[in-house]
Length: 221
Image 1 (cartoon, rainbow, N blue to C red):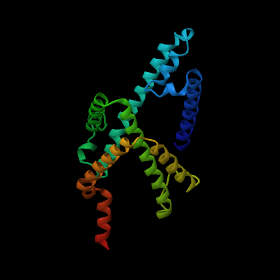
Image 2 (image 1 turned 90 degrees about the horizontal axis):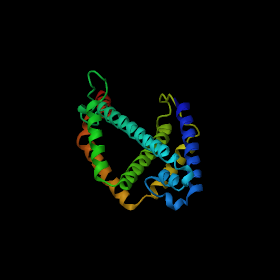
Image 3 (image 1 turned 30 degrees about the vertical axis):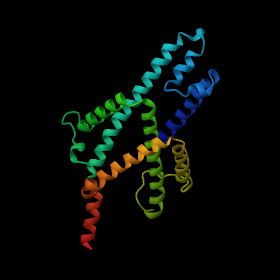
């Protein structure tokens, strides 16, 4: 699995760089700061490539659709895992009796995604997704760094190489990208974090399986 993940990342990185090189060779990079840079690039390619325009645009739509599908598959399973750990109500861990999927979480995620997608500008949503994802990467890198020193004997199916260099570089690079986002996006992130902490301290902390295990250990001592 780690080899597959790293190989996929390498292939995607090469493809993204290749697309960026081609686009910036067709139009000036300042013209690509739009929600549909590929469409802008192919439109500027000239009449000789007009036949390619619908193909590229359909491909872009298909790519976006696949990303949305992956998100709609991934987020309900995050809720499922959190609910299994007691951090969210058990309803998020309900599995459909026939399809064996977290169906209530999937419906909830889809409804919220449609509502936010229909009510808010795509630029604002992309900034929120970016800063949230980058913050998650920062937390994961920090977690790897902390656990390597506080619990070095824990079972690890896959170990991050070159610690602490890789986690520190991950924190710095993601933090730098977050620094470049607008202050309004930071304000929205803080509001979102406060809401998450509110849910945690009101519900998650009391029902967390980790907290119950720690309480049981304390009682035994």
